[in-house]
Image (tube, rainbow, N blue to C red):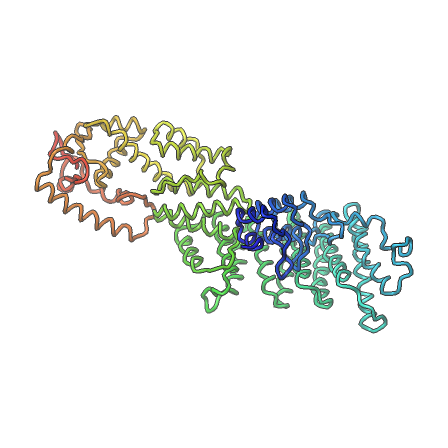
Length: 622
């Protein structure tokens, strides 16, 4: 596997091996993108940090932009910090300023070598252009953009005027070139400066609160790009740069920001640029979500979704767009705590059919969390465990610690409720949370569960701070632990008082009685309950079964197997991993503990372990 492929897929171990083998860390694909740029685009923080530490070139400019530009466009703040610490934006070649700095202030990194204002002092030194022809004079006028960048932090009004002079110089050259007055062309980099000046002008106007003027200038960005034949990557950077600047101003009021997004969407639709429309829509969805307007966020996604459908059905030839749509929709439901069973089933059905070349870890983590919740609600905890663990690792890869913490809690809960011996805390990714109080509490709960330590389990249960999903299934964890604890507690005894078990577990007598009934029905305990004396009698388990008892057990065992098979074929919202536990409330609602025909039918034992027979002073349950 090449470095670029490993960076795309987030395979940190493969990347580390490649680095250790002294491979070329700056190899590029057809678009000039390095492995570092791909790692930045996919949000793989750990890979970006590894490559930066290994002296990969952080300033390589691809057709889609350099690493720092892409990180800021994608909103990867942690990666932006890593890149800047590694020297991104400080390349002596004078990499172009970031398109997305049109908010409050700007980033002047990379332009320190222009402080001598050489662009307006032609001929002052031997290295300058000397006596310039007309074309060179226009180039110098357009390059006043650099002076504007220097002034931006000090005086935005003066910077605004300089940006306008830059654009005017380009428009004057363009007019004379088109009319034939001059014949020399201006190079593409100089043309791009004029475009960047328009973007910067829009950002400053938004910051000043001059929204109408900003929209007017933003409109010129689209016409400029069309007239000047700007490259796709530069056009993308310009459009998204203004959106970033607008989003930075949302504290003034979200209405003005949304008007900028609406302008972009209308213009992009006119141009037929569907991919950039989708990206703009996704950013608008994020904006609504940040403002708590989840209804409008969903409506934006619905509009994008319709364009990814044919006759009302998902177009499976667009797996990347559909994955992001469903992931973002799921994220909205997570935030509103409204991911009910029908929604989780819907997401699972739609996303399990998608096949992407390289799944974005951001989308995959959210989708896998959805799958885990879906299987957990059905009682299929082993499958839920696998999906939660994958979601946790992906969240860690992209540096989303809050979501990683949440998924790790779900992973541990599912781990306790399934039969796997795998310990999620053996995972390298989980070690990052060793000192996290919430994770420490659920880790203590798992350790107590594994060792069947009642006292520690109680203490850990009081210490955890479960979210709504953990709270929904925590009773199943407690129930399962109590079943295991009872089986452990009764080992040394032939007769055990229900009151003793109740006191040991901190559970009511009625709750302990319910658990004992279930354990007997599941064949995990061979005993009988003397309800009058409140005793679980295990002595008869060593006696030989009578022929009548054997026939009765075989018949009841066949009946129980049929019920269990039927149960497994149906959804179990309150499901547990063992036996008929999920249906216990319904099954025992008609049982009168002390007499009656229903009680007499429960004369059940087990052929594989202890069995009890006969009747005590009161009715007994086998």
